[in-house]
Image (tube, rainbow, N blue to C red; front, side, top):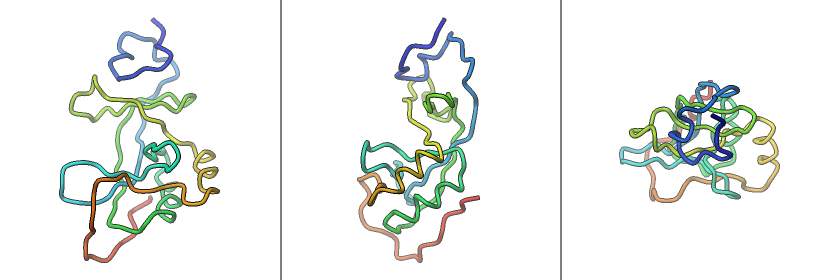
Length: 138
């Protein structure tokens, strides 16, 4: 069975021919905090999580964000490199995982040419009094 044009959840891939899909590790920046929830770096235009396969690409995102306590988070995903669509394999209810896009280096470079292309997802106010350290990008 072929994959639906735009799968809306991971379960939409079950029983489909996954030729061209691969298991990979993707990376994104998120605010470091002790609360429940994730507050990732997102694109201002489109409000997408900035997820990449090459962790070192996140340095250019970090350089364009308001400096706050943050960290690099990595996830195992199933993704289609042609479309850039990915699903996390680490969700609590994996079958309901929603798709997101993995940005290529070229797409990220294009975004970085814009003024203020990234911001932190809203919802977490305040910040730590701790000094801000560079996340580990390697």
